Image (cartoon, rainbow, N blue to C red; front, side, top):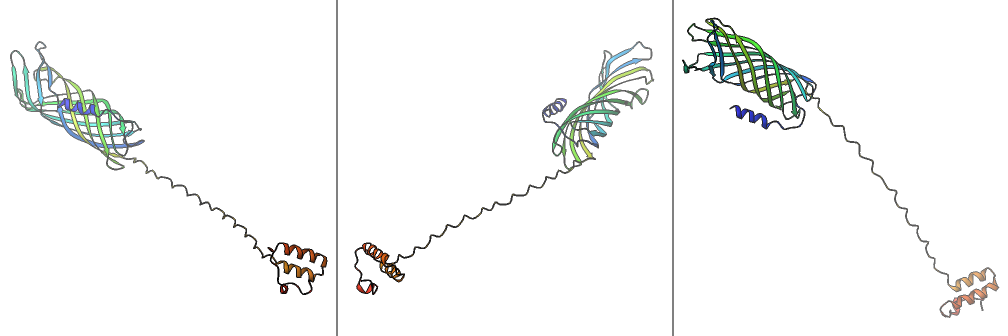
Length: 298
């Protein structure tokens, strides 16, 4: 299971920057399965002489991991505060000692309450699919309860420094709401003197979690309204080409005989003879009839 989780995180490590809602706060809730690693104890009895170094261990059943988050998105970078609760029941207790070697059924539970500050880098698109990676540091209170012991119920509890690694995928289902899947590796330690014949009990708690996320963003990005397209330019109306000038009507040439009569009326007798002779020369040698000539021409 651990290899599958790590492979899923590694496969999501390639993308291009930005996600969430830039410049806005957000809150969310996350819940899922907790896979606590085997927990080994170091035991010291009251007399200070008998020391069992890692000979007692706890195998856990699959547990639950629930947290509340709230943060602020700065763009490619996010800061958030996380309140978490982890719980897993004991499956069996193991012993690896010369005197006692084997396993017995477990009857107890492990609980961890944590307050973490996380720093995350976002990749992807605000309005679609994206993912993030990061880590966190804070404090955790670990409490182990053993119900069936020789002295009755025994509790071990301690508060200590905790740290975690995070990776996840988120998808925007609306301008304000994201859903996602998150992986967490968590680690802390404890060291307590519970009494009841023990001087000191110490160990390390480590776990893997796979969580479903529901995130609400307070600052949805403003809808970008595209500017109206520029008005189309007015069509260019070309001036009509000037109409060709009408060719002057060709007037029929006056016949030589008509010109002769006109000149005769104007009493230009000297020009009459020359015009008439010229007209006769160009009349294609058509001799006019005597009736076509003016009465007093000859």
